[in-house]
Image 1: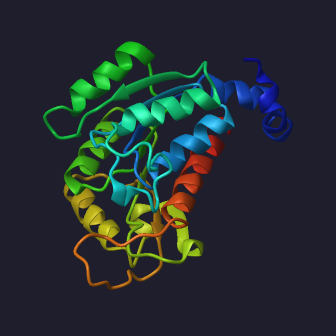
Image 2: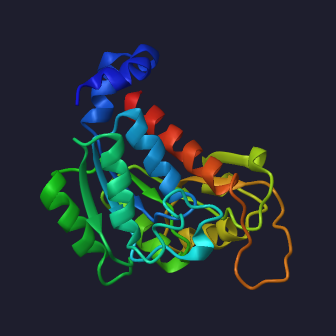
Image 3: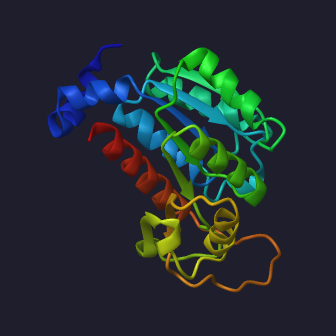
Length: 233
């Protein structure tokens, strides 16, 4: 497969910037409503080295918002479905897939596994929901000086226009961002790039976060855009 399919991208950002993207190594934690669209945006922009990490399988409840979820993928490992989609877009992409749930006991091992195949990591995207796991990823990236963007809450939101990318300590409204800010202060981590929503969470009558198709998808593509722009600067 030649690069003709990237002609329009090259016309927009230039050959040198496109080559930067093709030579960059990206890690995406979480392949849900946000993460699946992050991966889509990055691969279609020209990223050719990507690690995807998610322990879950596709569930019927994922269909309303996750790019990799449909009636044919229910019950399949998310990393497998995501890899297949990546390679349908660009067969030469090097995909590292890890079917794991991140915690304090395995973060070093996971990252060492990635580094054994990639030699270096240019950018990490945190698109997972669990606070403890998010903090382990953030701590690792801070300690090892790896660029990271972390997604805050996209559930119980209806207005995709309210998303903003900023430093965690400039956020407001978002309950998850509040928790992360508090924990980062304890860890003496003074900055973190995040995507968050300024929309007040909508109250619902269910225990799990409510969601809709066009909110986490927009968040994912905004994150992909931020990663690309940072890489080609």
